[in-house]
Image 1: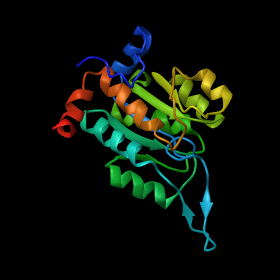
Image 2: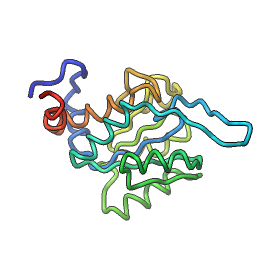
Image 3: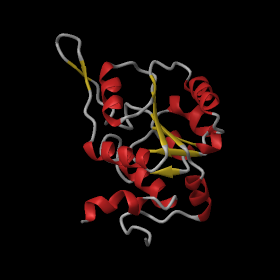
Image 4: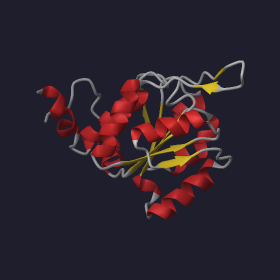
Length: 184
C-alpha cells in the first residue's frame, strides 16, 4: 500500500523508531482526554474519551503492538476504558512514571527502544527521554513538545492517539490489513 495521504511521511530516523515499537504506553489526562477534569456533586469523576482514538488503539493492538496506560492519577473510569479497549497493561497512581515503566518493560522483556510513550506534561519527560519513540499531542506543554520525536496534529482527547496508531501501523506495514475490512 502506498503511504496514506492523511499521514505525514516520516523521515528515515523516525521510520526506524516506529518500526522497532512493540509497546505503546499512553498517559491519560491531556493525551487520551483533553485534560479537563469533571467532577459531579457526589465526587464522581468523569472523563471524555474520543471514539476514534479507541478504534485506532484496537487496530494497533490487533496488528501485534501491545498497549498500556501509564498515569499518575487513579480513576475507575480509566480502568473501564482500558478494559473496553482490551488494554492489558494499566498502571495508575504512578508517582514515579519512569520506575513504573522500567518495571513493566522488565516484566515484558522489552528494551526502551521498543517503547513509545505518549505524554503531554512535564511529569512525562523522564519516560519520554528514555523511550524509543517519545510522542506528544499538539497542545502539550512546550518542554514536552521540544523533547518529542513526534507530535500529533490534533490535541489530546481529539484524535491524537489515532494519528499515532495509524502512523505506527503504516510504518510497520500493517495499516492496510487493519483498514481492509472497512473498505468492502
